[in-house]
Image (cartoon, rainbow, N blue to C red; front, top):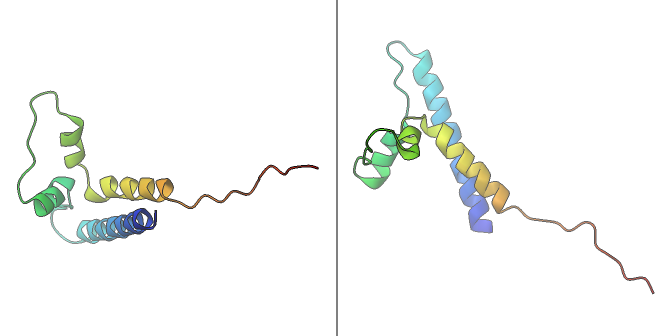
Length: 95
């Protein structure tokens, strides 16, 4: 549980860094070339992802999205899945 929460927060922080990098690139002069998920995949895996035939698969569609838009929901999902659940209402025995 702790590892999942830490990984979720790390992914959210990474997504915020990527989003701020995209914002800086968008405000700069010239063409806006953002950080795409496919580029992050190449950095992590060391090879280009396989391209599917027509119609495009969900994976190839996600690889064309901005990296922060793919990583942030994964971080939020990890945080929600690994959160601490406090039991506030318990049944009491009477008698």
